[in-house]
Image 1: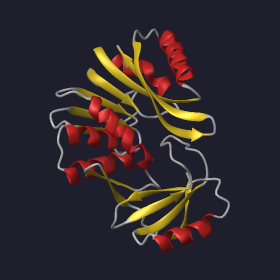
Image 2 (image 1 turned 90 degrees about the vertical axis):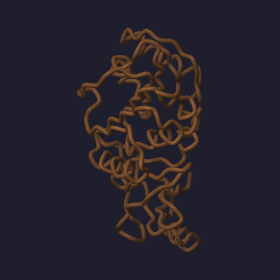
Image 3 (image 1 turned 180 degrees about the vertical axis):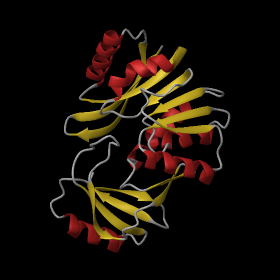
Length: 248
């Protein structure tokens, strides 16, 4: 990935991937080619810190990098300098939304600006979605997007998911591949009997991902079985983002 675009035809931000040798030259070319791109950022490294953000710097353009990103019929307000968001995962969000069943109670851990919630609610108006995110900027934007999309039955909670008290859920989504498996015990605690847990991880193959998650389940005495899997996106040479579906 050389760069990705977050926003809409009215205003967008381009984000150049780290490792590009001459980001300023590329930034100028991007803004010249795409009139809707008002700012260009450059990723300076991997996601870090409590809020799991890529360190970025503004290369060229408007210092106000807040945008409204549009995908699949819904809108997500955010500032990519304050909130992690990947437009490349729109297809995966649609896959998950299609798996959800009418009337389910869904928990999204590490929810960010809540794009999974909006993807789900776009298809299922009667589903209850609870989102838990530790980044207050992300939660603030998620609440603004709830109003922007005129959706209800979405609850955004700013908290450490290990410390919040919640009920039980039919489906739990864990879209944080760096560390999600370390929170499987929390997901299991919130799961109803028969619930589905979608956990994301980085690995080099389906088998390796399944084996890794099976070991974590054994460690935490989590009683569930793998019922599905999906290679989501390439992440680095020989490394992919996988989703493993568990049935409690």
